[in-house]
Length: 87
Image (tube, rainbow, N blue to C red; front, side, top):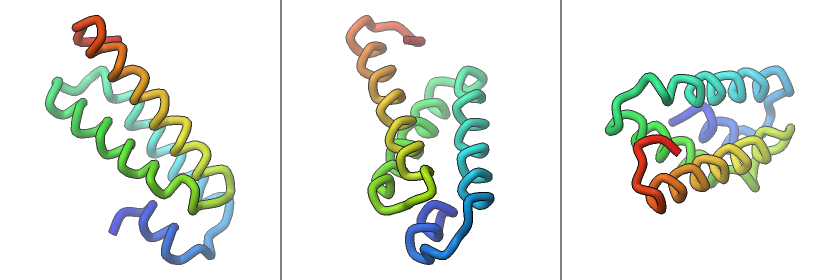
């Protein structure tokens, strides 16, 4: 089970826990440029999958997941539209 899945199932965590999860997602976002295309696409897809919990988790973390996934999906759409490796 992922930390996000655990968070969804337990529902009894505090702001510090959610802040730590946000920091980890931000680290992933910063590292995307260092990954090869296959790893980058897998990481992006994983973050997008985590956003499915967005409406079920509080403390602002759910909103953070939804916003991050939306930004990634927009980036992927632009990349596909313009045929570039980086949007």
